[in-house]
Image 1 (cartoon, rainbow, N blue to C red):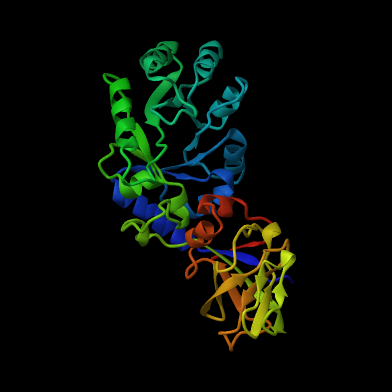
Image 2: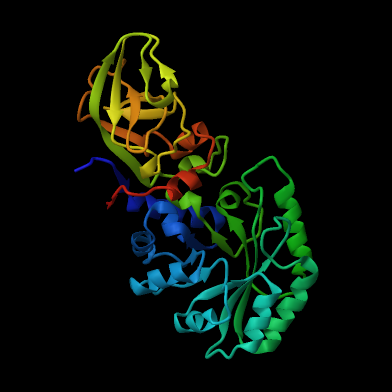
Length: 355
């Protein structure tokens, strides 16, 4: 069988969830959208179910998958509903729901519901993606209360630049939020992963850890709290071929790398069809036979090449870590000009092995 696989360390997942709660002193919704950032939403939910305060997903399809798997904990729909007829499913499956637009409030007012809704009223405090405008926030809250269809309203917003620790934008967004919610009763949810790790002063009764759950830092620079995270996924494969090349020989598509010395080149069963970033350049770190080395040349659909010249113990069958406990996903992502969120979510074809 092809040796490419992703090992998922569920104990590390639990460690990272506990860290989010410890750092925030708040209840935490484990964010499992996009199939738990490529880690497998059902298995991650099951691993956390005994201790998580709840989960958050993007949409109702993701929530129904968890319910079908027997997950009974609270589940928040971060994008809310897209059609009014989803409200019946939200009630049937006891889901929590974000409300970010006036049309959603109108739909709630028009729709008969069998029991009170648990709603998270989202303010656009400066990101300008989704969320009610500050001048609409109080009237929206009042309309929902007057509808008689709401059991609880949590007041929420989302940061655009919390991963920039020297930027004042998050402080500005908190000020906008505090002004808009003045006089409104309800718990507050503001902090995502970078805010949990880097903005302890931000008030939040509920936090929403996402990328930190999976052990990757949201910051480009080193950060003390992020250093406590444990990587959950190890993407690994094996060397399937070794080439002995003289100096001046090209390697891979486009001859983007040419050997500068007599070299041993290892071919690894891993490529962009598996989700490894195609734009990862020569020099991107890998671990082979327990020793740090580097990627050489272009990444192919199913294979990539690494340098074995200074790893004499490596050969056909040697294990290769593409990212994981020793090669951080954030370092691979930075080399490829992207972010760990994307490389996790792009993972496909490789089997997920849980421990």
